[in-house]
Length: 130
Length: 213
Image 1 (tube, rainbow over the protein chains, first blue to last red):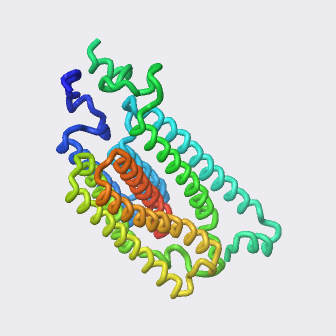
Image 2: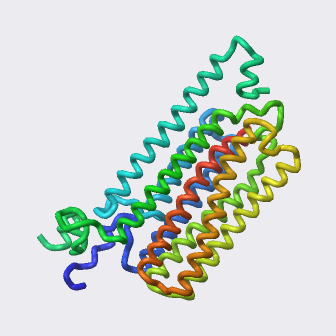
Image 3: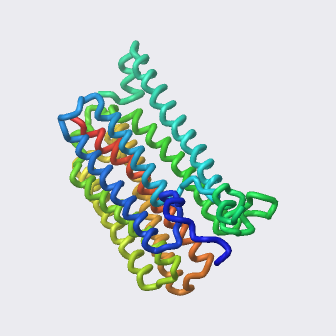
């Protein structure tokens, strides 16, 4: 064990596994605190009238992405450490596929709905829009 | 260059021989197993992205039936969210004590993880059954089919996770903190944290954005 020195606290990324029980617990507590804070802000943003209405949905999505980041770093320990390169690359690929599937579908289906005008009965059959 | 400096630039990891960063053979099992499970979790998220895309396409296709604003109760969702988040947090504490082979604390945290997961699941089942009782079941409209598929799929994952949790508690109890048992527990914790990440997307996209006035 004396081969290397314990890395100093400042050299450890937030989610990096520590060998010290206190700093490990503290990392989880920080993650929990940030997640609760972001959840609370999400519920507040959704119910307040202080924010410009059309911007609320975008704000909620941004808050959700931020909270996912907190979970990834503090709970799943996805960091920039050398052991984590493969995990980060896999995550990047996963995020790309998720992005393509969701944005592609919403984009295309939104345009199809807008362009399905001529036969209302058929449009209703396709999408059950009342 | 000291070993620590080498670790910082990525040449070695605390002097371990099996980092896979040089010609030293494959990574150790404690790295490879979680990586493989991480790939499974990511592919699961890809499946969920398709369900989210379906839901987003069909959310207004109510066929004259109930809409998101009429159906969803933010209070219940807030309780569900906090229960699942705390469950995820306590699961992390269980991992910390499991690494130190502390049986009593590990079992206690795992029980708490399961109880909080059950709270989440019961609230979700209550919500589903009251919606179905109101005539807002999955066959009512395309929107409700998509809703029950997306949220139900997450609930099914939580149910499977709880069964897995029970199995892991029994294995730790009977086999002790052996290396392969710890790896299984690590995979479970990855699964459980990932479910919480998916829930963040569900409560934002389905419940909060669905109940904006």
